[in-house]
Length: 620
Image (cartoon, rainbow, N blue to C red; front, side, top):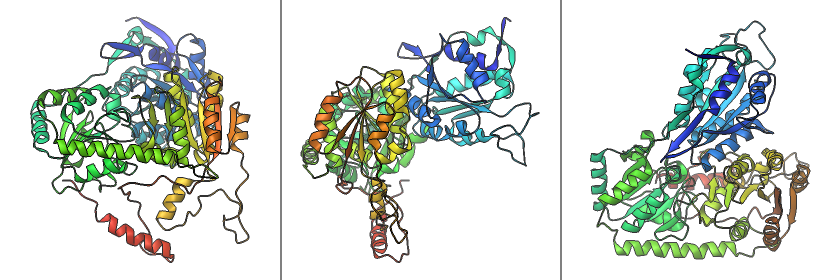
């Protein structure tokens, strides 16, 4: 057997360069590069290996370990999970900074490879700098925190362990059903140790991403269930995008007339103005989608986890005999709500259903109702966009301005706060990949880093990052990386002096926005003083961004026009009215309210909560 003597880190980097993914005959490198921040736990291992292969796997310098995972996740999602990045950190805080990113990747079912440095395998010099000690066992480090948030985890204690671990890691990264974060913890001494690796380990390897088909008998039963229904509804989730099933969904909907509601991850499955498109569904849904969901006797869930925001905490579907069909690549999700499970690739399943449903169409009056709901929603959207609220603009108006200024293929990026709910309802998607919301984990700080990943995945698209002041303060660091790499972002920064989303939720549960505004302490010691004089625009300017300050919605519209001519990352900063909110429509979210309280507002909120909770259902 021919071998090559390499350090473990050199072997790892060489192996990653040789991996490709393939679907539908199209092949691409599995790894677009490596994001990293170096410290004593990886500089002499992974750092040295990347340095000597500078013309191979490209290294990207990040500013925050959590942020670089977010960027990798956004890139992978934009590439429909067929490409991703590896992310390397030192031991200790650099590693644990990535845990949040790992959770985000796994919850959203998006592949990313994490390579944190680890403690010494030989243990002679323990405890080393940044090592967690445990009196019960020496076989533990902070990297064990990655175990519950990774779909595959291993600690490479000997260099030859790479030979068996790497193929398993690639299997999970390229599995449409099992993908998520993959963590290989790399002891810093093992990274630098040499071994005679078989040359066959480094031969080009192509990982085929399959399109499995469901069981024929289950397809037959699903078709019978659809034909028997009187009020069917399709819920389009993120799996529609990952399977590239948008055209298949459009064909099925045009053929059958079944209306469609979209989850956060599934938004853009159909253009906003497509026939039978009801828009957002669930807690942040449109009135039409939620009314249809309430009365549906059959729900066809395509590529969705059916999270509480989609099901309105199990209150969305109120038909006494409602049934479900679950179309999902993951068996675990296909069975939810006691659904008839069609486990398989969404595009393949939808195409098969279209063939078997030849001649079937939903009732004409039912289709007309959906069209009426859609028209009413377009009118309501225009009302919100043109509110002309003042003196400070409303968040809905700013969304309208960005939507109007964007081109059809441009991408809007967001993640946390009140913006995702408003965007889910209001944003008018015209391209399947034009709406990029991280809402599986709803992670504050994802927005700018995620926007960078989106732009890196497709530089031909303008990227609009919409972010509130709370998320901006948590992670604005990758503005620097966007400028360094020449990937322009247009960041629309909405300043409402606090955590507006949770402020609204706090008021709803009777806590009167406690602890959600950025204010000085007053004479009583409470945070009720004047607003903190924080200048986020100046901060963005200090990081190298061009900054456009706005006071009115007219200013915002002019700034959006000006921003297109600016070649580097630009921040459009505007103060908005935190109390002028986009309404909720025909929906509810279960956030428990104190059962006993001394405050009247909390007691009133509890009474309303107990009434609403009675609508929650089990589906067995």
